[in-house]
Image 1 (cartoon, rainbow, N blue to C red):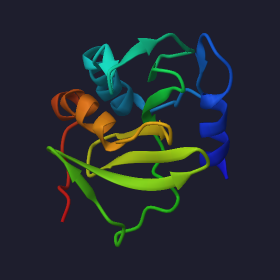
Image 2 (cartoon, rainbow, N blue to C red; image 1 turned 120 degrees about the horizontal axis):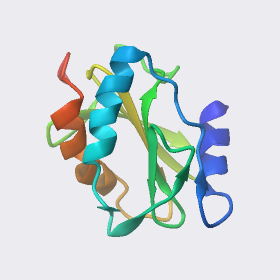
Image 3 (tube, one colour; image 1 turned 45 degrees about the vertical axis):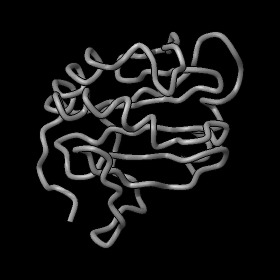
Image 4 (cartoon, rainbow, N blue to C red; image 1 turned 135 degrees about the horizontal axis):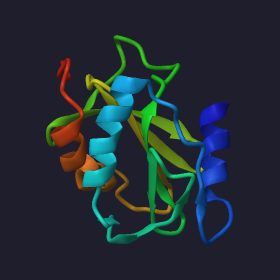
Amino acid sequence: MAVSVALATLLAGCGKVAVDDPTPDAAGAAVCAGVMAALPEQVLDQDRRTVEPGVYSAAWGKPAIVLRCGVAAPPTLTRESECLQIDAVGWYAEDATGGKIFTTIGRATFVEVSVPSGYALGTGALVDVGDAVTAHDPLVTPCA
């Protein structure tokens, strides 16, 4: 499954974090530029790391907590999927090899956050990046 492979790639190695950078459309790229510029220097008290290529991706800590902006909708996301509301952002949670992947729901552009299982409270990462999402990724449909 692509989700498992992507997470495994993100968790491997040390130094720079290699990420499969998304390729959003023009509208998504504009949203993502704002989101990326507003991201915090720390997530779950972990410092930001260098990401390659990193245009629409960011990472914090070891193992890396990774945010990717402008991803495609998760293939398992349906109208009946549970929406996890954290502050003003709705998230869809998926189990992945080595952790969880959270993807925004109801926003103009999908933002994905991969949190390795080594972090006790993975949803705290969503709180930390939430301000950047709410400020720059317009709400289209709130969680029901």
